[in-house]
Amino acid sequence: MARKEITFTVTANGRDNGKKFKITEMSARQAEEWAIRVACAMMSTGVTVPDNIMNVAGSLAKEKPSKDDKAAVALYESVMASGMIALAKFGITALAKVPFTESKPLMDELMGCIQYVAGPTISIPLDDSHIEEASTYFRLKVEALKLHVSFLTATAS
Image (cartoon, rainbow, N blue to C red):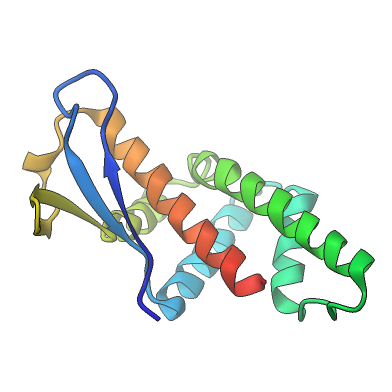
């Protein structure tokens, strides 16, 4: 199965309006290692991880309950859904509490998933000339993180 890809079009007013970017999920190994490094960086700075996110982390390590146990399946899916939404909101914000020297390589790796769409069938490596608004960088990181969160949800199902 191929990695997921999305095309993100900037809709915010500004110099990047209408620009398109292709975001491709990391390999499973890279995503897992990246997530571990993020968690370690956050915990080393004393960031408190909410219970629903810790529940998701625990659920990822467990097998999904048998389809015969409908109540257990419903609870498992509820934890996964609410936790993954919380993780997406929590992730970028929590990284802001990590010292820049530790968070920059993590953010750079996340940005490595993004290419600039230069034409209908042409995507090229992203460079500083493709983005003119600081807010676009933030939005691209959020979109890349959302793509990877949906990847984690799929592996947990």
